[in-house]
Each structure stands twice: as C-alpha cells, then as structure tokens.
Amino acid sequence: MSLRILADMNPWWKYDDWQNRDKSLVEYRSLRIRWIPKWIDGISLEPFSLNFVLGMRQVGKTTGIKLLIERLLKKIDAERVVYIDCDAFPDFVSLRNSLTEYLDAVSGEKFVFLDEVTSVREWWKAVKFLIDTGKLKDCVVTVTGSSSLKVRRDLELFPGRIGKGTKVDVMPLNFKEFIEVFGVKNYKLEYDRVIGLFRRYLEIGGFPLTINGFSSVHILNAIVSEIVRFGKSLEVTRETLASLISKIPSALSFRAIANGTSGYSYKTVQEYLEFFRDLYVIEFAYLREGNRVLYRKERKVFFRDPLLLNVLADWCNVEYLRSALIENVVQEHLFRKFGEIYYYRNGYEIDCIADGLKVEVKTGKPHRRYPKDVIVLEEEEIPRFLIELFDDRA
Image (cartoon, rainbow, N blue to C red):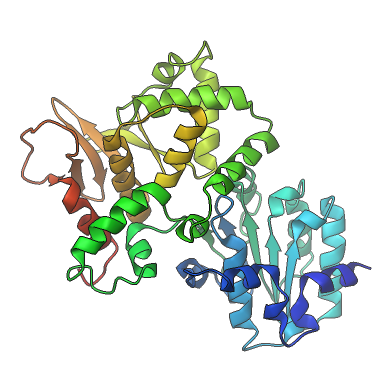
C-alpha cells in the first residue's frame, strides 16, 4: 500500500515524460520568467548525507527540488530517487513505514527527498530511527521545511548524524540575481535600466510569483497560514508588526515596540518577533562597540525582502519611511553575504557593519561627516553597491 502511494508522488518511476505530469515542473515551465535556482548546487549529493533545505513558503523550494531530481535522473535509474510529500502522512510512524518499505525494495545508493517535513509531528523520529539502524547509510536524504521555527530546533536532534550533509537557506532573489533574470548582462552598460529595476525590486521583491506578475496575496496568505499554524494571535501579530514598521529604521528595544501596542508586554512582543525571525521574515542587527556585541541593547530590525515589508505594512494598515525600505535592503544583502550584521552608535550612527565594511545609507537623512572608512551611499549608488557585493568580477 505504501509503495502505491509513493508511486503517485514519483511519476518518473512509471513515465518517460514525467516532467509533463509533475505539477511543480508544469507550473514552472509555464512561467514567463524562470531560472534554475543556485541554491540546489549547495546540496550534498554524496552518501551519507542528511541535508536541510529551509525557507519560507512561496520561495520555490519544491520547484528547486524537482529541478534537482530532473538533473539526477539524467545520470541514475529512476527508482533510486524518491520524493515524498510529507503533507500526505498523518504521523511519523506512517512516514517511517513508507520509507522503510521503499528502502527495502530498492538496493544501492538512493536519493530521498522529504518535502515539508514540519507538517508531520515529530517527523525526526522516523529519520533518526532509520539512520541509527543503518538503513540510510547508502543514501542522500534531503529534508525541506517551510517553517524554520520547528526545523531549526529539530536540527539539534541530529548531532553527529548528518554525515556529509549541509544546511541550505532558500531566500527570495537578491538584487544581482533579480536583474539577471530580467536579462541584464552588463550592469555598467545598462545602469539606467538597472536603476529602474531597483525601483521595481523595492515593490515586488525577489519571489518567483511576484516577479512573474502574480498577486502578492499568495505571499501574505503563506505568512498568515504560518501564524495560525503555530497558534499565534493575528491581533497580537498585527499590533506588534504595526508598531515595528512605524518605527524602523530606528534602533529599538522590545519595550519601545510594546509601547506602540494596546498594552502587550515586551515579553510577548519579543516572542512574536523571534517567531518572525525564525520564519525568515525579519532579522536583527545588534549594536557593536569595538569587539563587543551588545545583545541586550536596542537592535535594528530589518525585513528580509522588500515585498515582505510592503505586504505586511498593507496588512497592518500602517505606513513606513522610504528610507527604512532602502536601508532594510542594504542590511539584508550584507547579512546574506557575510552571515552577520551590526550597527554602531557613538555621537553618530553607522547603519551597517559587516566583515570590516562600514556602510551608511544616506537616503532621507541630513548630511553629516563620517570617518573616511565609512561608505556613504546615495540612493542612486545603492543598486551598484548591491550588485558588486555579490559580483566576484567587480
């Protein structure tokens, strides 16, 4: 019975033209603007590997996995690749049983893709059991999760068990990737067009659907579904985000954000902001003084894609400063490049400090004197800065 269920999820087991029967690939090939996501190259394909692919919904994880499967099937037998949509399983026992039946039926090296594992309560028990019993020793297992809230915590349950595996964060396109999918080949020769695309990027962000002209309501619905799924209050969420959005890009304490609500405690606000941080919606930049990072001081909160700020501001019926939107984009790009970002304040403030770079975003701010090692960006200089940050040839 279990293998019959899996057969429906793996059309390449039965059909040579399986790509024409796979919903994800059919939808992908119908898009006017499409690309092969670079993150699939970061997945380890050498046994034994346990890979984790994390990111919010609507960012293209399932499509990327199917494109990787298509690549694999050009090299190996179809039955050695299994894709499992975990939404179809009521519990980890049924998932474990289906996996076990498949592993017993197919010999040799296998590639196992478990999509949306967080839909199965205690999913990790199935995988951990099969690792510990040796059934996955010749396998590459790739786990995806839309909600990093649970998956990130579950990573800690696999100490010494990931083999050659890795963790891949899937994010909306950065600005360099954005202009590339719109056909810009030499940004220096097309900089007027690049500036226009930057304005567009500030509106629609780097999500595949909005890049292709679909409504941003899909992104908002994905976020709201995660709020409901994890038992968070929509009312508390709206008030917390409204207070936050109205105050950025200033450095903020949790108390300051709580003071902008109808009376929620700073602890509640902290809990909700940490929740959205785990969902890849926001991130924090902490105050840095020399080699010291002051985690308990006010932090700068930035949204991880411009569309997220736009749709959540509309949902909360609150306006934001344009300077906040642009500063958020610069902060996010530096964070993606270096994995950490801070700010500095001592008589004057530097918006972004990352890996030795000191960057001040000048848009909408009065002129000040800054030390010579600070990069001060005017708005028209920002697109070039973002591109060159990720351009190895620059």
